[in-house]
Image (cartoon, rainbow, N blue to C red):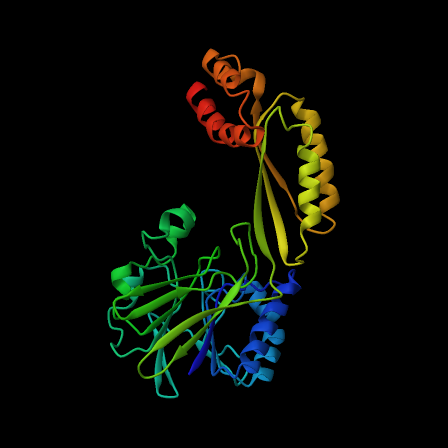
Length: 346
């Protein structure tokens, strides 16, 4: 069986491009002769959006001819029930604490989003599940500290030991930023990430997972969504040596972007001796001009007063001693050293 695993489309009446991504997923599944599509929560951005967009989504699913398994996430937790109709090809897994169904001799189970710990929802789960669907926060130390925010921890927390042997494949949803897969004993668990950039955490191309599952093996392959937007972070370090050309450098960077999917996210850090109000005015002009191509585009500025830090004799001596270093190398050294100086001296 070939399964398409997607999550976190956050369909919204105000974001038609997200419906286009759902259409892309359904068409890609049909083109590749996939047997099943899984939406692991947050198909909709809100319960209100699910009501407003249900007719559109139903038409897409009915045309697909491929079964679509849908389970709820924290954003659309009240959108599904016994009387929810998304067409004959939709299989809504809404029962709590879990909902099971058998398709082509494979047994599927879903844990619809609940304000509980994951461990509380699986107490009586059968032990012969092939594919489990869940929407929550996986606490794995291999990635938790870099990708999980405090706000995520409230959503149906999942521990690695909860997943060991629970199913052959665990189709996860909830974390937007990146796609990740994990191996727990004989269980493969995976987050595809959000299928389209929903916030600035969505860095890098968006993917769905194509899961090949048979009696003996599971293979998981990320497939890039070639119409979905995503963020690319670019950092600029400003220093008196380069402050006169920083605006030009930013404009050159923006002109080099040749992928329409990319949403640039620019950060300016460092120290400047120019008038900060005047500098931010120049940045504002870039933002307004660039927003025509990237709605909501913003340049994030975190700069400090160069004169203030240079009042300390150790910093001043450091600058004098490094004056004859290769300019490129000197800038790299300053980029690393000066934030540390600032933290120590403030």
